[in-house]
Every structure is written in structure tokens, then in C-alpha cells.
Image 1 (cartoon, rainbow, N blue to C red):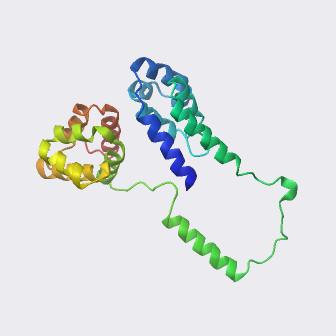
Image 2 (cartoon, rainbow, N blue to C red; image 1 turned 60 degrees about the horizontal axis):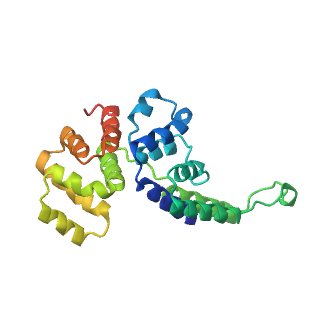
Image 3 (spheres, rainbow, N blue to C red; image 1 turned 30 degrees about the horizontal axis):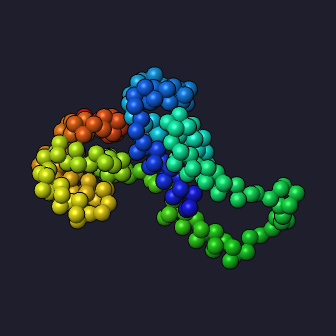
Length: 226
């Protein structure tokens, strides 16, 4: 769990870094083989979207953060460099025993107590997955994606949807977490626009989150909803 928290801290730090277009072009080119799609390559216009694609390609994950290391180096961010260095040292403390030291018991019947423990463990894994399961409802997936990824642009999204400034201030006072504020904004969108997918996509464009708009548009298109 600690590794996952540290990974997310590095991820969020990199996603919030300023990345001028000329640097993004250079960074993106470093991963053109991993992206492996000219169409997708052209659609990557922000650093957070590139990170998400690298995660989908399994280039980035808890066990491998080399891409983070390269990006931080290219953007010359010492703070993120330090986070990555600390992450690497923490992983070095987990050392597997040499093959000769591993005890290999003689195969035999599994005691009933062990079977029960295995069932409990399987149940725990099923109900507490490390990788969250995708919701089967595309609308829920879209809401979850916006809530988790909109970040500092949530106010711009709220304004584009039609939320008044006073209400934005109240949301900020009432809810410490951005995701909770965005839930309210999306609820207002449903009441005002009746789940209009076009208006939601347009609002994301106005909020300068074209990358996020393209992602939710993909979800809608996959389910023939646009």
C-alpha cells in the first residue's frame, strides 16, 4: 500500500508540472514506440494524458517508474527527482531470498485450515483489488474519470457548465476534496442539461482539458452513445 501511495504522489507531482509544448513534443517522442499509434500520438497534447497512455501500455506502473525518472530529468524538476530517488531506495529494501535459500516443501494434501485461509485470502482480493475494476455503466465511468482527473481545472469546468461564482465558492468551502466538488458540478449538469454528452464535452474543451474530453468521448463512442 505504501508503494502505491508513493507512486500516486510522484504521478500527481509530475501531472501538475508545467510542461511547455516544445518540451512535451520532446518527451512524447521519447515514447513514440511505446505509444505505437500515430493517431493516438497526435492526440496527446498534455502531460497528464501522456502519463495515462503510458500506464495503459504498462510502461508505467508501481514496479517500473523509469518513465517518471526520464520526464522529471527532461523538465529539470529536483523535487520530483528526490521523490523518485526515495521511491527507488524503498524498493531496494525488499530483497528476495536467493533460490538456494527458498524452502520447497514436499507436496501433500492441503490442511483444511490452510484451505479456509486461502478462501478468505481470495475473498479479500476479490473485494479489495489493487487495480480498481471498471464500472460497467459508461456514464459512471465518465463521472469517475472526470472527478479523478479534472484537478485544478474544476472551476473552469463548473463555469462552462453554468455554475455561478458564489456557488463555486460555497463548493470550495464545503468540500475539501476536489472530487466531491466535481460530483456536485456534474449533478448540476444533469439537472440543467439532461446528461447532454455534447455539452459536457464542450465544457471540458472550454476548461482546457481537451485530453479528458477525448477520453470520455472514446467511452461514449465505444458504447454508441454519441
